[in-house]
Length: 203
Image (tube, rainbow, N blue to C red; front, side, top):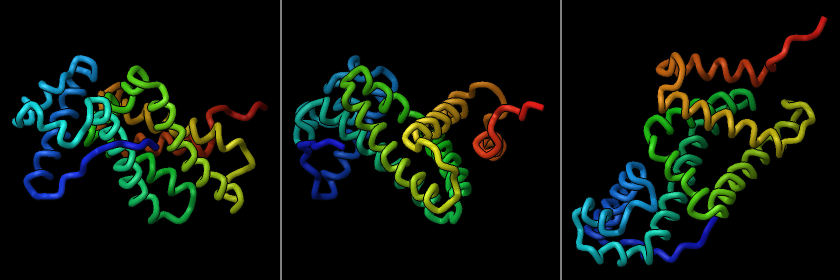
């Protein structure tokens, strides 16, 4: 996705400091936004010396990119761990939507970190979603070949399905509308739409 010039910590103390900087940056980017958060804000919140951040990250932008990449990897791993246990494409889609919602509910900061990239560097935003879409399309293409899905433009469909998961996650995280605590119900409605469509057959 992107090349970063980060110095990875090697000792236990360094790893702890690194993690504290990550946690503080996530919290402050979520609370105040990227542009309103300074390096001094992050190091003060992390309880480390002002110059400590530069031992690991050349700049605030590199730290932000690192967090964006970390969320990307963590979301994929979380979903893959659940989806890989499923056999059919239908079950994979259902489990994938549910896993994404659960991850978003546990990590609401991810929406700010991911979507703010549109205003920090549009290429970051584009690369983030293109990376997801390419992987999604690959799975959909395999399902078409196996006869589980009808012939359809899987590039478009990958974005449609990502959009559904994104906004259903927002519904749950920010308590938009009703029944946001009943994830199974919400996922059932999503899968009913995916499987059966929206419109009735004309008589």
